[in-house]
Structure formats: structure tokens, C-alpha cells
Amino acid sequence: MQRTVLYGVTAGTSVQTLLRGQLAWLGAHGWQVHVACAPGDALDAAADREGFTPHPVRMSRSMDPLADLAALVAWLRLLRRLRPEVTNVSTPKAALLGSVAAWVLRVPRRVYVVRGLRLEGASGPARTLLWLAERLTIALSTDVLVVSRSLGHALHTHRLLGRRPARLIGDGSSNGVDAAAVARRTAAGDRSALRERLGLAEDAFVVGYVGRLVADKGIDTLLAGVAAARTRPALLLVGSLDEPAIAATLETSVVPVAHVPWTDDVWTYYAAMDVLCLPTLREGFPNVVLEAAAAGIPSIATDATGAVDAVVDGVTGITVPVGDADGIAAAIDRLTADPDECVRMGEAARRRAARDFPPERIWAGVSATMLGEADRDIRPI
Image (cartoon, rainbow, N blue to C red; front, side):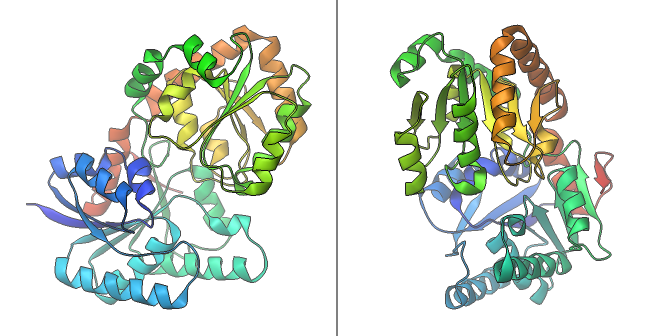
């Protein structure tokens, strides 16, 4: 019997990246998949790729009472029309609105996938509002899935769960990683030609970063760490540059910097990197670390929530404390001085990505949760 599920995410880019392959897989395994999301080209492109039915609902990331009320009304109308057996919501605004609407209309199973905690990067009244929104979303859900073990522990620490358990699928991650596809795409790139096009020296030790170039991702710490490294590496940044202050810092960098605006072809650029650095202040589970691992690239990551789960310290990369620019510099110098260790870590990361994070493992766990079935890969946190 085919069942109907309505996914809810705030932005189309989340459907493109966080749910790549998942929605098509569900459609092939007995689900009729619908997605409520802010309108845009990203949503349309994902619908064409995955074969789900899109439902544009205008939602903003920031708090906007009038816009949020209009979005809630749109959610209620959509749910009344579709009458799904399941809702699956994630990302803060869509999760809150979708959970409220689904509870009001008594959708039988209301799954909340926690992909990170925005409150960890907030303070004062904003933090209180984010805590209340998170607590309400969880309270209105029948099932709570977390994408990493440390994120589950953070929910307990912040007293967000009440009596409801959080569950983790397998070893975590938002969506697993198609390690073979990443490896093929990266291998197809010409490392030398790519570096030449980017203006990076062939013999440079290149530190890569993938993601939005914003303070919340620890970019200031990354730039300070790279500048402090004695070995003077080069830096390759792939992602949207949203903050003028960071742009100004890049212009005065003491090390070579190449910047690639956000692209759908991120995997190609791993070929130009020697190590990925993720200096983030908070995560759910960073997909870019898994992608780099699939490409045979080790990572330097912080011990922030979520990020700490993505790297096995000393085996698949190096973990440093949050905000520790000197620690990043020391990790870069260590890997630069010992290329063999860098290669060993990259190979270990590749094996771990392929072994522990196949996408089908996550997708099967999500499907079992939505069906209310037991699954050996789903464990309480």
C-alpha cells in the first residue's frame, strides 16, 4: 500500500543537498512524496531530479510574525488537502510551522529530523526564543531523529527532549554519502589543471573549505589559523561570500587564496585540496567532511557538536577545540611536514565513509521511522 509523506524544509538548497537521493529512493519504495518548501529554482530542480511533488510555501529563516502566520495558514491548507499519514520536517522554520500544523490536524506520525541547534550560536532573548521553538517542535512530534550522537547529547544537555527519546540511525549523518560517486567525480578532475585555473601553485599544500563564508562557520578562526601556519599553505574556499568583513579580510590575506562561488559541482574541487578544514562553531553532522573523506581527503575539524562525530581524531583527520586558530595552524603544519600521514588519514577516511555512511542505511532508517517499524540501525540516544 502506498503511503503519503509530506516533507518540510525551509530552503530549496536544503532539498538539493541534504535530501539528495533520499526522496527518489522513498518514491521507489512505496511512498508518495510531497515537499513543502520556499519557492525557487532549487526546489524545482530537486523535484525534477527526485520525482517528488513540490508545494511552494513562502517561509523565511528569520522571525517575522506576519509572514510566519501566513506560512502557517498555507501549511494548514496544504495538509488538509493532502491528508498525509506522515510529516517529515527539518530546518528550524519549516520544522516549527510544519509540526504545529501537523499537530493541529492530527497527522498520525510527525517526524522531526534535528540537523543542528541554532540556539548554540545565540545568546540573550534570541537564544530563549530559539530554545522555546525547538522545545515546542519536539513536543509536537511523535518521533525525533538526530543526525549525530553528540547532537542527541546536546538535546539532553539543553533539556529539550522531555520524556521523548531521540534516535540515531546507524553512525549518523544527514543523508549518508555516495562515496563511489564522489570518488568518481573527484578522480575525473585534473588536479594540475584545476590548480592552475584557480591560481594555486602545483606544489602548494592546499587547505580547503566548503560552505557558506560566514562567522557562524568559524571562518575568522580558519583565516587566522592558515595565516599562523609556519608552512604557509594556500587556501581554497568554495561557497557563497555573504559578509563584507570576511571579504575584506580575504583581500589582505598573507597566504594565497582562491575563492569559488557556490556551485553544484563541489565534488570536483576536492581534487585540488590536500586537507579540508571545518572550523565550525556548531553543526548537526557536516556532509562536507564525508564528501572529502570519500575523495580521500582528511579533515581538520573542531570538537563542536556534530563536527566531533565526523572525524576520528588521529585516524581520519585531526580534531581541534572550537575557536583554536593555533590548533588549526599546528594541524596544518603537522600534515604538511608528513605527507605520508596525510595520505594515510585520507585513505582511512575514504574507507570509513564507504563502510559506515552508505545513503541507503539512512534512507531505510528514515522509512522505518515513518512507518513506525523497528530497525536494528535505529538506536536511542
